[in-house]
Image 1: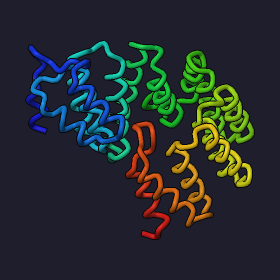
Image 2: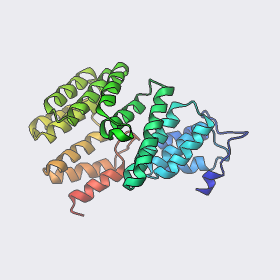
Image 3: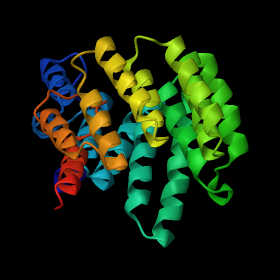
Image 4: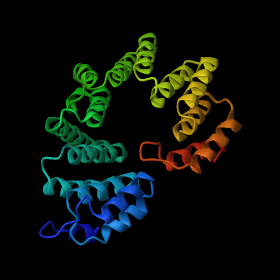
Amino acid sequence: MRQLLLITLASTSLLAASPDYKRALHLYNRTEYDASLQLLLHVRQPDAAALLLIGQNYFMMGDATRAAEVFQQAITADPNRSANYHWIGRAYARQAEAASMFSALPLATKSRQNLEKAIELDHKNIEAANDLFEFYLEAPAFIGGGMEKATRLAAQIAELDAAEGEYAQSEIARKKKDFAQEEIHLRRAMELAPRQVGRVIDLAKFLAKQGRFEESEKMFQAAEKVEPHAPKILYARAEAYIEARRNVEVAKNLLERYLSAQLTPDDPPRSDARKLLLQVSGG
């Protein structure tokens, strides 16, 4: 912590094109977060890009508080970069999830404000838009959430990515418990992006939750054909089995394979897989 608080942003900086930064980014993309972080922490005066990556490493390692501190430094170094506000918004949201009710409310508000700022700076930042959409959909109105806001943002998301827009509509239908419409939108999303394995997984998970296990299995098999070696299929399938309390031994095997696979930051963290494995093992 002290080392980060002493960071200054004057004079020489670690440029994003430097070998050290590229190596740190490579490690991050391989989910080797601690190795990436240690490489960056040896830089005396990191620039905004390096600060963002330092914060991302802390975030992915589960330290949202320290991540937020570093993201704030990245904002100070580059106040016009959308990604800086997106990530600090994510960090505040993660802190809010773990906080008491009294502390969670201001953190959630700061999360929303920063996500909105990220989109203000870059209306094409669809990842920030997705996170803000989730906030609007789930948060109460008195801290800035609401179905009306979520619906408007879903339309904006659809303009950027039609399949993502359909997924947002499926989430609105889920919130309304309109499962028929949820399925329609999930199928449309898959039809619009048939080579995106996540779209197939989304439908497979939905079908499993509806108790339509045979159809769900067919969708998971279809996902494997789209991307045969995608670790996220292993995780999603295991999670679906565990939620339905079926195929327990198969779920264990899938999680063990997942834990030994080469993951990316877009995959569920290994810590989540370990929790599921502990749950299904009776720990």
